[in-house]
Image (tube, rainbow, N blue to C red; front, side, top):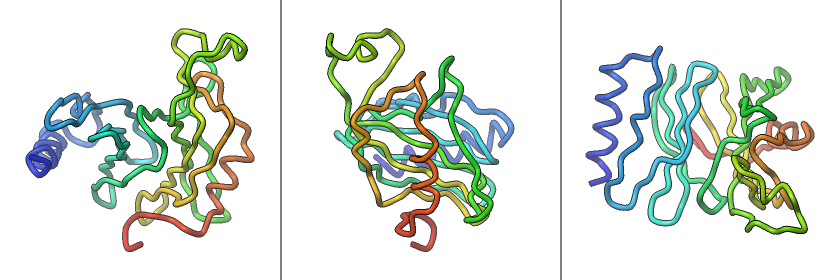
Length: 173
């Protein structure tokens, strides 16, 4: 069943082209559930929940594939206030774009007001996604951020740490 989804995804990308990003992962088959998506630096990225685990699907210039994520679902791409994707580039390590995924949900807690806000998703763990000239990678490092929330952003030091992390999962790794 998983191969059918990958083939459907590949066919959909071939039909719609690289310039348009459509909710192609909005498929509920064999436990898979679309959670979040974005497009950046020549890649389309989607987070899927599959049997209680988050996976990152990617499609772009240097190929396509999926990578297993460390945080527990649901996982989301980290955004700044207003919902804009937060990312940084680090030319010293050839990273075109570094994104952060937040997961391992934080339960709403009245003593932490941001966890009670609508349209905010807060989690305990974060993981880096690196887009480099040779493909898409994730860090093996999953950090306990204490609290990271979409629509709130995160200190740039976390992005720098992920960008300079040596242990990566991705093409040829």
